[in-house]
Amino acid sequence: MARKPAKASGAITVKDATLDLLRAFGIQKVFGNPGSTELPLLSDWPDDIDYVLGLQEASVVGMADGYAQATRNAGFVNLHSAAGVGNALGNIYTAHRNQTPLVITAGQQARSILPLQAFLYAERASEFPRPYVKFSVEPARAEDVPAAIARAYYVAMQPPCGPTFVSVPIDDWTHPAEPIAARKVSREIGPDADAMQALVVALSASKKPALVIGPGVDRAGAVDLMVQVAERAKAAVWISPFSARCSFPERHPQFAGFLHASPGQLSDALRDHDLVVVIGAPVFTFHVEGHAAIFDGDTTIFQITDDPTAAAVTPVGTSIIATMKPALSKLLELLPDSKRAAPAARSLPPAPKPADPIPAAYLMHALSEAMPRGTALVEEAPSHRPTMQSFLPMPGQDSFYTMASGGLGHSLPASVGIALANPKKRTVCLIGDGSAMYSIQALWTAAQRKLPLTVVVINNSGYGAMRSFSQVMQVRKVPGLDLPGIDFVKLAEGMGCGAVRVSTSAELAPALTHAFTDSGTNLIEVIVDSAVPILYGKKH
Image 1: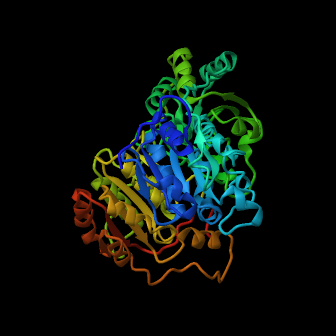
Image 2: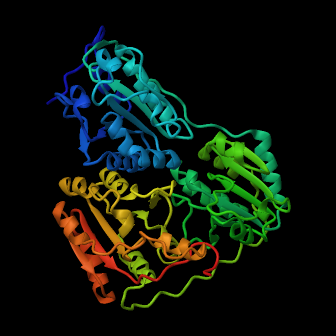
């Protein structure tokens, strides 16, 4: 149905006021999986806002997350009441860790029967998604809903970005409300001048500085600025542990590598640097316990972050709270050309050779050779990430996405959202067989919309990361790590996608070529060597 223009003045419905707000905020798509408590919102849906249907709420949130990251505007999500929000919570948590701006609405039963604990009601609805949303409310009156949604948008978009939540009773949408005008709210935060000068002095005096760069740089669209700063400083560039974006070109001569999430291994990697400047990342995200010698006092640490909480938990050094573009622009302005020699380029591993069964390294190399220019890679294969980092280098801005939470089920639907945002470019989802099963129904949405998406399932018949940890932790006879008998080709075909299985190295290149020249959604299941990678420390 075509949009009916709202009245210029006077009362309109809550629904009309909300839709006009979405238009004013530049929100062109709403991601949802509807239930009965959402029907009044969805009735007579306008044709100028695209309703993107997902088949399960976690997939819906993942799609909106990917779309929001790719467009750098908030994703708008419409969920069913308590049960639907419960299904979505894992990916709401991931959006929180990804710092992705989302405005999530959920249905609620009618206000008149809430005291009776009605069927499908949500008890204390605003508390349910906390603490993983920045703002959460069930408005006291129906006419307050548009203002609550406006506030949710402004909060979601304010650095550090993140999801927000509004619970809306079923009968609120048809109530009268006053129109709400969209406002302009600035989002850039400038750095403290004295702190920036102290950083410039430290960089100028350093004999061997290192920059540790995190996802905040790519989120801010500041990768080119980051490269200019690194080149002027002649500093080695490391990527922060578990970075969910590519904030520096991985074949740049100053790129030193990826930091481990082990305190000991991270400290060893940075041992020779007298100054470490962390930009757009926490100091530091660890995954296993151990002694972090980096905090013992021999290394000077600075941090630039748009997240006051990340600054507050930093154990040592100086934190500068600012958004990336003004901070890096000021640093570039103040920083003199360094007389230091540029750090030596790191040695690259030789290209892996084909073998059968297919080594994961050979798959990564083949992908690197075959992916079209401008491809966005969305990854959820934790056990293969070190191999990917060695043989599938990312070029920089908007080239790489993954989940910052460690929770599975995000990246397949996120790749659908990214493909929706970039319909003229190929998106590739690189995902493990275990990870793929968490949100496999997202393939249906991609197939229905004929999105340019290729899903590469790395099938090692199990949870590879858990196999690795069980060996490092010397834990024996762990059940539930093997996943035999899943046929991803049939699953994909059943949801409308073309699909093929590759089990030999000779089949790989032709399959990739065909997949990347296809106009729609397809899946390649690659049977790989099931050797267990060791993610941290040494195998015992």
